[in-house]
Image 1 (cartoon, rainbow, N blue to C red):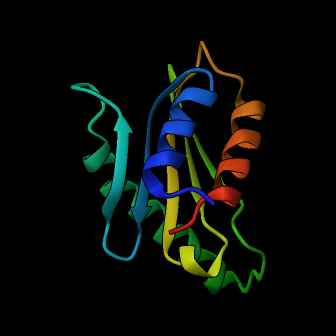
Image 2 (image 1 turned 120 degrees about the horizontal axis):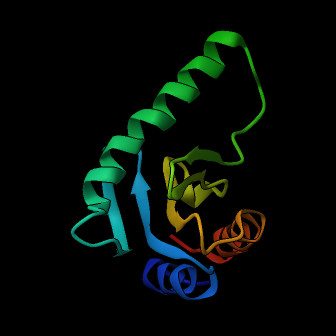
Length: 124
């Protein structure tokens, strides 16, 4: 099992094209940990904003009576991919991993696969 800091470091080093990563509490909108980002990518602001995305999709699923779980959500920008991955473990309830990728340097399928593995090892 890995803690938040180790998991974020693993995310940034093992996923090609990673620009930033965060573990976010979508009940409060607060980032519990961030790594990467920079002046053009404020992970704290992005984390807070993406809580609205998670909440909206969860609410919509409830209204539609959909019973499946969200595996991940992908936001595709011109030069970046943003992946939101709600944690499935009991200890991760209300949390999601947020990963920003350079679209030109990353392999989306491999990034999703690696993020799933990192989630499985994360202990919150």
